[in-house]
Amino acid sequence: MSLTTARGPLGPDPSGRFNVPVPAGLVYVESFPRRVRGVRGGEVVVDSERVLLVHEPGHPPRYAFPAAEVGAGLGEECAAAPGYVTVAWGALDEWFEEEERVFVHPRNPYHRVDCVPTARRLRVVVGGEVLVDTTDTVGVFESSLPPRLYVAREHVRTDLLTPSTTEYRCVYKGVA
Image (cartoon, rainbow, N blue to C red):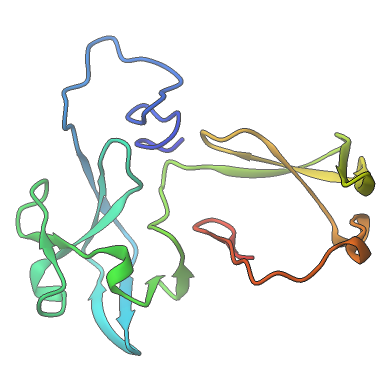
């Protein structure tokens, strides 16, 4: 489960409760054993294997790096991790964990995504036309989010669709 978002224990709408009140401003900081790199203008400006992951209530996790491993003027001191700085996600063009590009924000090690074949029926009607009607679905069960059903392209009446320039980015599913 995500610690700090949605229905996580430190999120705005937790699914459970603690036996004592959680102190306001509580921040959880942990070692993050992956190499993280950040690129701006084609140049690597952050490169570290000594990364911390900072979890603040109501926010996705952030990377924190030893100040010496971040390009000049990029980092902001991290009060929860002395000697470390954070870099605003949008300040860089690309982020990588090891060799894989990461979108939106750092992946959360407490977030789980399960994709399970299911026979649940999905029927989608738009403007009176049936766009999808199948029981050949995949259930996507993602921490703190309602279940979603996905279908293969062959089950979609693509002749009813028009191309769009809309782009969706997900830290777990990539770009669509």
